[in-house]
Length: 393
Image (cartoon, rainbow, N blue to C red; front, side):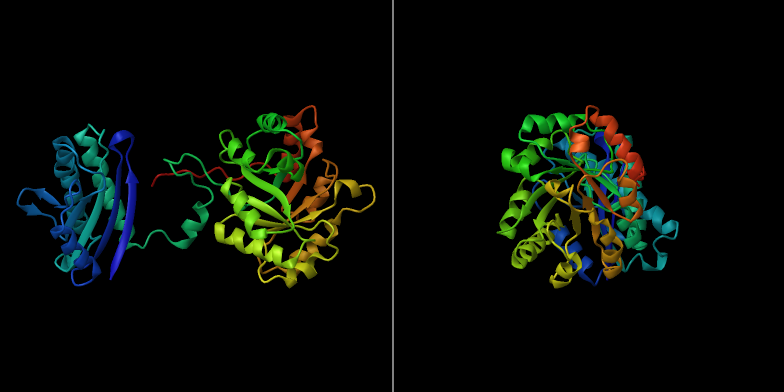
């Protein structure tokens, strides 16, 4: 019935962005083509793509300006180099066999074209829109991208206008730095001393949240826009409410207390999934994590096998449970974090048992050399994540 393509090419104000739909005249694209050509909107007047006056390209192509045309200068850019570029790209695509010649009278194309008001160079407007149209068209007909491409790029890529990535836990292991201090100034100082690494997660611990509030997360975003931040609320009641509070302050994840009511845990997991942030069950004081997980309607994204600070001298680290949990939920995507007195000497054991996240608190945050100590743990975790991310195709 129809195919969809998109392409962004070029640089500076002349950058070209084309969204394109190609389909049969007798289908929905044909109907949209007629509707667009006959329903004019001020500032967004559609125009046929012509190679020169009186010579339209085929398949007939309707160019729709994305940016409001507010002056004759703007209009000339669309009705001049952009129009010619789209038409030539369509004609060349037919000549090159991308569009079968025998289909040019059966198909129509709608191309939404972006031309920046500050664009000056007609040559660049032409060249970039020509390239964007050809690329969008070939992608449409090839059903690009496939799921493998999307999956590979979605957590690596940076949107050029937004300028930062929103991280996800897609490639463990990670180093989670738990900050349990009583003032925002102390948090800022610790964060400022941390090295930049895709493997670092920042946890605002329960004491910090009690002292400073969840609003500190949003405040920190000015300096750490790309860091994965966990709100360690250890929610024991009103799971939905606290997830929403953390979400509103731009937390990437929230912890729910596994020792709390099952209804609270389940509502928290459901709300976190609905809002698109990571749910973590803190298993502190939960003797049988597998039993708890199997009782839930929906698994969390991660669990934390947590030995409390006050129990470090009395309890063994619960890391022996990692292989058992992974075997029980082998067909599920469930990350396992470990916390409680982890040092550079004990961290390798946790990694060897396949922990996905090692949580380190005061060993880093109370160190005289926070940056170097963090590097020591990063070496144990395994170095940097693949940096091959940004490519405008």
